[in-house]
Image (cartoon, rainbow, N blue to C red; front, side, top):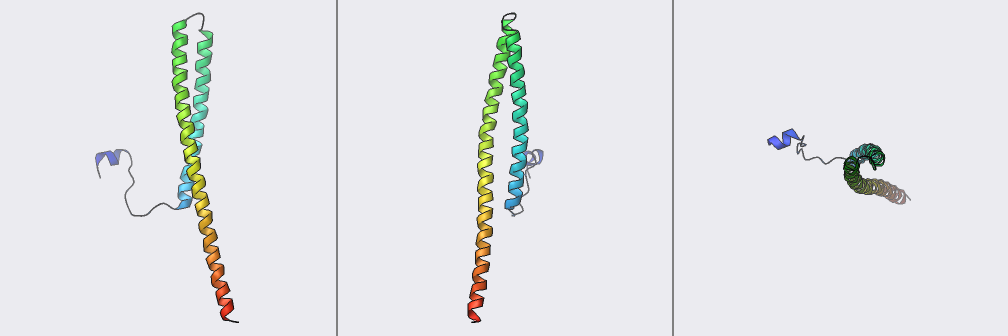
Length: 121
């Protein structure tokens, strides 16, 4: 394994893909983490806006710097919104696929039961 892989915790290729339940769980954890980050950024944006308002007439340099930080934070917030949308879409797709798999398994089981019942008639 390369140094890059060791530093960033690259998972070992053991040939096993994660189960749908594991992937759904990980996606939910990521959604929660990004939600917390969103809340934090929103608080920082409000704080920068307050700084800009209080210094608007007194110290324009400080007010402009606060507005620039606010704009940068809003850009980060927008990126997180996009990422959250993508994660939500993936999670829903996995949940639907998991449900479809269970339905197909149960239908196959029922079909075998019906075949068995018809053979015993």
